Image (cartoon, rainbow, N blue to C red; front, side, top):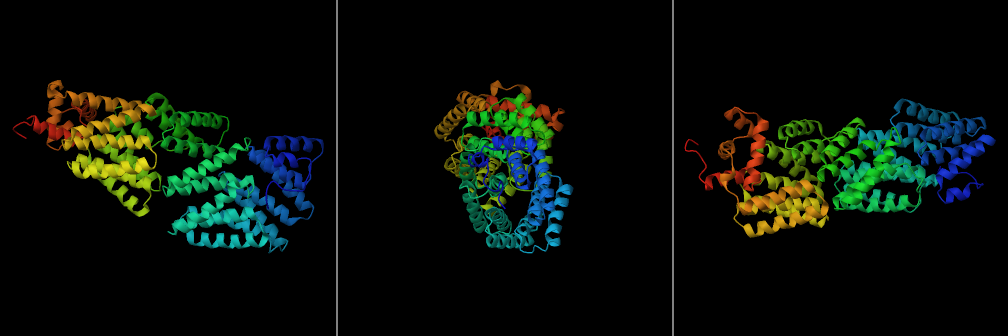
Length: 551
């Protein structure tokens, strides 16, 4: 049941060359001159789908369905009905799609085609639905039946779809190694050209999603690179191209290839703008916003977060981190609290928790930061993936530092840095180095602290991470000549209250000013004194006798 299919004809060369636009135009022209037969219409539907002409694909497959029915070929008619229904369901048109799938089932039953391979295909959509709804056991049973049908019929497309479903299901029930092995097998079939192009996009995106759920960045990187090479041989191909671009950009960003990542995601977003209803568009604009934020292009980043939101992609936690970078700590805290309440599924949950720990520390809510870091640690322990372990260790180290435990913090931060370096993630490693420098200063190891800051500064400079670069340079400058005489009277008041353990909210109430104003004073005094944590500020206040006698 491979698409496009049919006997050899004048279009065989275009299909072999995978020139899908040329194939589509050839068939459209032929159909105008003389209506295509059922097989020709089926090929037209496949070609239209491959170049992103979903409406034209549905129309052609509908015509093929009727033509096969009139010719008495119930199985072929049911096959076309399946593909119409499956694509509608995938695109969110559940009612119409379910109707077509039910029609395919009825046609097989009326024709008494108990051994048809189409029965195997019809097992796939409801099984996917069960997986998505958290009911993997019956889904696995359905996929196993589909595998048996595919083997009996010798249908490689169905076999790939069913084995892919089995892999996702096995991961859901905790049999992770078996599940990932099946997904690898499916991707070998995909990149080796053993399955039809019409299912490649769906399979690839689902496999990468599974890797992201497991935080398996190495596997995601390998398959993304392999599929990028495959896509390059088929420039007309549309299904999966948007998702492929986003995944490729995420990996390029992680590896520090920011210029290439920015150029690619900018092109992708321009492409999204030309295609209304593209499912990946929101994710594309979110990824563009993230790169803009990290480069310090805050106005552009905010516009992209807004566009992502309009397209259905939640702008958090990126938007909250943007507000923090803009000095609007309380706004960031309110946003990330809401996001932490709503985010329940991985990998989003862990991404939000990591941002939550960072933001809560910045506004002085150490208890909330500790809760987020502890949950991250539990997730990392359960999954065991290096990326999640590094994220967790960084959050834990930052919290320990804020709690006045620099030695324990340094141990966790060194673990995080080692993993990020092993994953070839220079930005994340540089951020950890900044935290390590703070811990080392607390431990009076100023030489090593300076080396860590220098290494971080060079990494941020190479990446183009302007806000981080400015922060490190300010820290290095301030630490060379930090003195309390640079503080205003109000900043000294705030410093004294920080040393008593007060949160920003409590300081605001004590001084009769807003939390936003307190946050600004905290940021200013940290910058002037070359400090990065409240624990360091407390130690500085005691060391320089800034604690009022009453406290």
